[in-house]
Image (cartoon, rainbow, N blue to C red; front, side, top):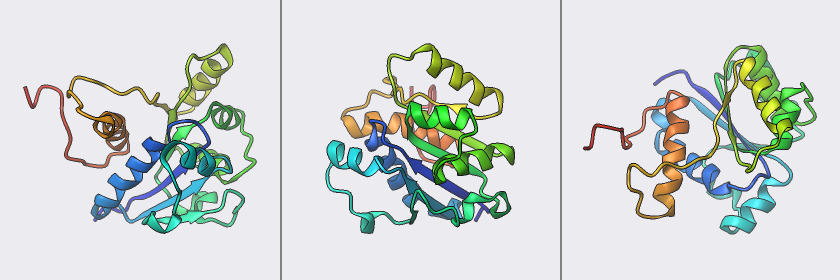
Length: 189
């Protein structure tokens, strides 16, 4: 088992299905990860319920922390979480991270991950982008964060919405260095 500790944050951006599928995949890949911790923004659960139905925290196989819990382990670099994935990531959250505004556990944890030079993946969900969004993305990218627009691919010929969503989720897992059995370009031709 690898010594992996991962934070998953879910914001109120549209795209809750990406978070749900990411959580489902991580549950199946637990042998590669020591700890997965979750935090949902105040709006995330409302959006989740609007987009995909009832949110039942008992169906989530990982510990969920409150967005105002600054005593969560990953609020400090000494806890040594190696990866944070914000999925989906709202432009408001991205902007606060880009400008060092740590007003909740999500933005504090992202700040910690960046200062510790660990992996931060922001699965952004917005279109079109304005210049402020683009500038904030550049700031995050310049300090080592990864901007990952939730743009599905079609070359694997997905047959349903879940398979289409998984084209994004599987790339997120790749970026987080988690091995998943998935379509690979050129291998299945």
